[in-house]
Length: 167
Image 1 (cartoon, one colour):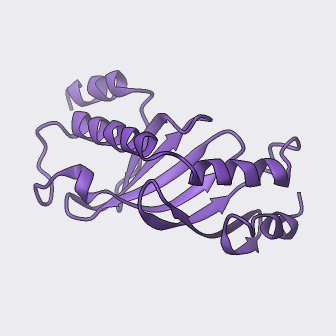
Image 2: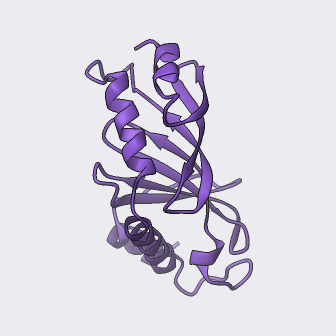
């Protein structure tokens, strides 16, 4: 796929879309979250040849049109996953995680969306990455902490098994 052509096609949904290497990007307003966000659009050209610019433009438009209720459910799921994983572990500053989460960027694929959040008060050195499925519902999450090797688990049970092991 020609990335410049993709960037041009995104102009109705993104402000000043740009083409770079293998993806296009631009700012957009995510009304459900009440914020502007950088939207990266990845056609996965190395892995897929069935994705068109029109398909990706439609996916971006659909993501930007998610309802406040859908957005609220995503945040509820993220908070529940993080709180389950953290448990009684100390955080940098005790505060409501939902209010601390701030969306920093998104990556839109043909069949998924990846969200990047920061929580500067509770997790100042972390990036929380959340994958949404085709219907924009919570699917998966991982947390990257600066200076710490990332570890991915297939679910909460695997994480708890890992945490329960003897050192």
